[in-house]
Structures are given as structure tokens and as C-alpha cells.
Length: 396
Image (tube, rainbow, N blue to C red; front, side, top):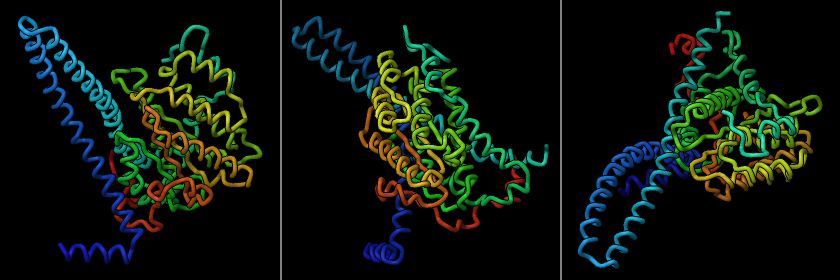
């Protein structure tokens, strides 16, 4: 034991940041394994609880004939406590079940990318209530429903053709897809906040953006499927914005932090409308001031705070380095990110998972995050992943 302590101390002295990063990776892997094991135990526990509940009903019925009214009240109190505990367990299991249903997306992410490489050579809507129509409200605010989907598609097209694939570091995409902290962010039933520095080339179609685009696209597809078949009580609400696709602040109407914030807010209303009551939607319609970051972010916080524990809100903002300049846009972007981080730290009932990414370091934002919330990818990824030629030969 003493020898192990010396080895650990030596590792900390020789490479403190690397040792701590590996520790975080192991912690994330443990959370993933613990949740899967916990889900299995919860299923067994629920069966046991039901049998126990039936026994308690039988006992209470027999005692009611001979015991006093006071004893009956005590039994009722115990029954109520059991019911309350079971309700809390069900709520937890619902969130875990929803998140576990996302787990296959991790495999689909790489399989979908692989399929694109292989084929490269070949050329519910419900109204919220009376007097409130969500579609009309979104139209008033000039909502672009397909903005995120189109951005994902634009990035996906860059992977078509072998000559395009040669531009990308496939080992980096593979490392991102399998990174334990990112996998834990996606599937572990707890709030999570990450600022990702991808250490990739500084371009709009970096490996980080390609990975993020496929992840977001899969989340959108998952949301569409769960909207059509709402068999689970929980709900995943994905929101995203790709700064690199709107970097031209002079020509692109979406190239400003105000529009970034407004896009996230309108996506939240659109995809979360079945979990928003009429009053909160009226408040959104009447009190949101377009072009005002403070008003938009405050309303975003109010809507998120109105969700119950069954809701999981996943926010992905990619390519933040492209909104760092000019200085005015960089300042506005920092205000938006700081407001979102503040909302996350309030720990509302809904589970919040926020992922902020950039192909390179986001110096202008790092002071908003703790050391544990900043994920730095290595500059040089070991060649243990897939080369482009290997990737092309894989079959989905």
C-alpha cells in the first residue's frame, strides 16, 4: 500500500493535469456502469416493493377488524410513506429509462458516419390550451424550425467523397465518440455542464463540429420518435446552435448572440410545448423582447424552471470561437453563455445537460466554468482509432 501511494504521488508530480484528467475519465466510466447496474437493481426493487405492498394491504385489512382506529391510522401513514417512496423511485426510473434509450445513439453516431464514408463514392403537435396557439406564437417571432437540422445536414455533406475524408482526423472523431466524460454527459441521470476544447484545426467544419452535428441530429430524431410514441413518461428536449455556420455577422441574420439566444428559446417552446402550460406560454408571448439578451435569457430560465423532474433539457452550442469576434459579438456571446451557466447552477427540477464546444480553446469563456467542467482533448490523438482508409472499409 505504501508503494502504491509513492507511485500515485510520483504521477501527480510528473503530470498533475494528465493524472487528474484520467481520474475524471475513470469517474465518468464508473457513473455509466453504476447507472446501468442501478437501473437493473431498481427493476428488481420495484417487483419486491409491489409484493411488499400487497402483503401490507392484507395485514392492514386483518388488523382493521381487531385493532383500534389509531392503529389503522398508523398503518395508513406507513402506506402513504411507501407510496411516496415508490413515486420518487418511479420518477427516477423514468429519467434513467429515457437516458438509457439514448445509449444506442452512441453506436449509431459512428455507424452513421461510417455508412456515409462507405457510400461516398456513389453519387404532434398539440395546442397548449384555449386562446394560445404555439405555431402562431412561433411564427410571430420568426422561428426557423429547420435551422438546426439544415446546419447538421450542411456539415454532414462535407463527409461525402473520399477526397473530403482525407481532410479529417478520424482518430479525433473516434476519440470524441468514445470519450467517457462525453458519454456520461449524454446518458447519466444527473445534470451536467461541459466546456469542450477539441484541440482540432480552427475551421468551421472541424472534427468537433462533425461529431456534434451527428450527435444533435440523432437527438432530434430521438425527440421526433418520442413525440410520436410517448410511451415513456419522461422527455428529452434537444436544443442546439452551430456558431460556425453563422459566423458572418454582417451578412447572416443568425450571426449574432441575440439570435443565438432567441433560437434556443424558440426551440425550447417548440420542442417542449407539451410540457408548458397556457399561462407560461402567454407570459412568453407577451413579455419576451426580441433582440434583448437579458429578456430572452430570463424567459429561457422561466420556461426551464416550469418543467417537472421528468424533463431532460439538452443544450449544445458548437463552434463558440466563431462568435468571439468582433469584440461586441464576443461580449454578447459571453453574456448568453454566462446566463445559461447561471440557469444550470440554479438546479431546477428538470435535468439540464449543457455542452459548449469549440475546435480550439475558448479563452473568453473559460472563467465562467470550474476546472472540472472544462474538458481538454489532447492535441495529438494516438493512432489507436480509425484511419480514413480503415474507416472506409468498415461495414455498418
